[in-house]
Image (cartoon, rainbow, N blue to C red; front, top):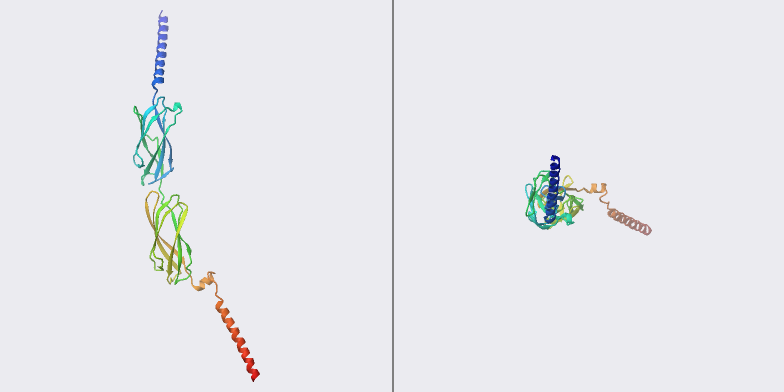
Length: 303
């Protein structure tokens, strides 16, 4: 008898468990279970330099079985990040379950990285709200890689020069080469005074503007070179510009070029010997000789 009661109790318990499972499944099928997941897809550039702007892209996906009607993504900006453009809160709206084959929502943010940010990985925090639940990502889920900022590298040099001797005038072409990955904006060049030359151009200032990465630009100046003793002419210039982060720079560079004496010009093959005068003298000498010889013969005949 006791064994029958135990068996009957076990059967009743199994029936109740099956019914509860069926009821739960039915409720899920009718209403669904909501859930949402956020994934950091990428950052651009990667890594981002200190003080630069980075674009981060997130994928927001409904991983539950129920459609979410009012999904909202909110960036929680904290050092070293600030919003560069747009707003921190993005209203996604209705988000269907990924089980139905629906696409996830892609959300982009543009953030400014502080110029003194620590190098390496820095956390960015997010919050997603579905109307019925709030999910916060603040435990190192999303990390942005930051590297040390490098000042844009510009090479400045004298590209062309037709002044070879002191106490002469001519033109020098000064070229600026952007050998950096980033562009340079609002570039200005000023020729500074020097005891070695006198400026003949109408202005010592030129506005060049933007110089793209891996590009060059040059400007001409007409000058008169004075009597320099060591044969080296100093041409100091000042350049002013901004990088893509609107950070301003100023740099002074002392450019130099050489001038030579007439003897050195001939020695180095920079100036050809002028034989015109010698040839003219030789011709005159020959004419005088034949004239003298002819006249001398006439005098002998008359004698």
